[in-house]
Length: 70
Image (tube, rainbow, N blue to C red):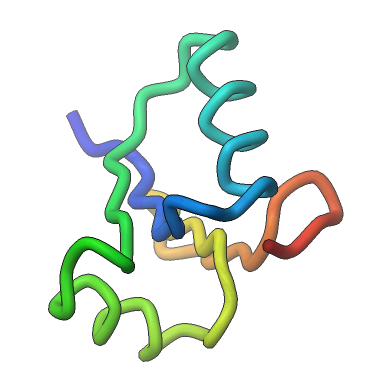
């Protein structure tokens, strides 16, 4: 089963809001914390230079969460 990939930063309040909301709602996702992996940072920078970045299963890309950017 494919799940959205979410690029986050460990100190990002907006990323924490996303994690808390999706966990509460039971939405499965793969989190890639960019300040813990240079490879994940490099991947994320291919999309944008801010987090969270959500890559949905259908290829859609969303920058930010709930109207906020971290």
